[in-house]
Length: 426
Image 1 (cartoon, rainbow, N blue to C red):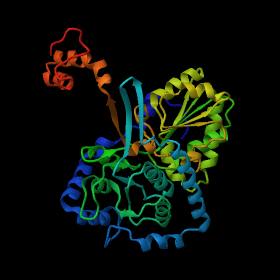
Image 2 (image 1 turned 90 degrees about the horizontal axis):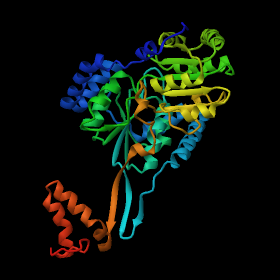
Image 3 (image 1 turned 90 degrees about the vertical axis):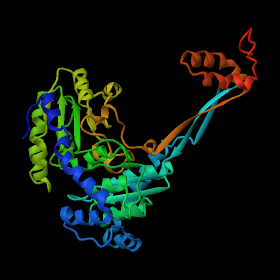
Image 4 (image 1 turned 180 degrees about the horizontal axis):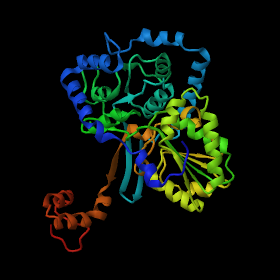
């Protein structure tokens, strides 16, 4: 269950199975494209074993969900939402900034929120109210006016309460690849969105990637994974607990310990066995641990190099002096520093976002944040003097490219005179 593993083997264990489900997902997309709401209801009965009379969750159902959730849990969701909001408010860009970079030339950026986004909140094995907050709070802070959410039926009261706390009122009982198709293509009930965010299984991830022609996505976000860089100072019980916390997510979760200490690796294995023995989700853990193991390295530089190569979703640094290691990390969805920073902090209450790229996509994608829900337009504002100062550059390059009208658009503004040229007759 816990043994040494080489980098290539571990990477292959967490490789996405997108190709395996492509055909099935394509069929689902076409069914939704042609069948609309009726197809979604049919697929809910087939996959979720739920008969639906309507897709939309009404206000009475949202309000009554509070009666089914323990008051203490609701209070914790409210506090978590406040912490997530606080952190994401720090990311909010200025709506417009302008800077005169030289006399007569002012440049800047205008930031505009997207008009309508879709958030996917997984269901199935467990309720994920935290994911409901993570997907929707940054969109609200970005200023997105329309946020719709899809989640597999029956949507659990915890998820409904979280979405209500986040201020989301447009909620649909719809899961899997069919939910992604509905948000991307639109149906009678669900208007199409500009961008889809949120994690999901391999079918959800495949659908997101296949429908990017219709709606942009955040990034591929599949089964959970963690890499732990640890030296002899690490506490074996802490490392084991962090590995098991990811292993309980999904049978396809992948966990790896990268360590300079063979003794620590053995001790972590012992702790994993002990802690998993009576865990409520030990069967899922056991499957995930088949995708897991440890890698022994000669020093922390080698550990960092391996971690950067695999680009884990979660990276835990449990070493005696973590800050130099942190400075060398290039590829990770989220980084957790020190023995008292379990990944669960980011999952629930520290305020950072837990929707993160997996399967090596942290090499080119960032975790979900406010910027995912905005787009920018560059702004330029020139005076006559400003245009004069760069006019010759524009005319020369435009002429070199054979674009005479481009050059002419500068010339016409000086009525045939070219003050930026010494001897010009127009």
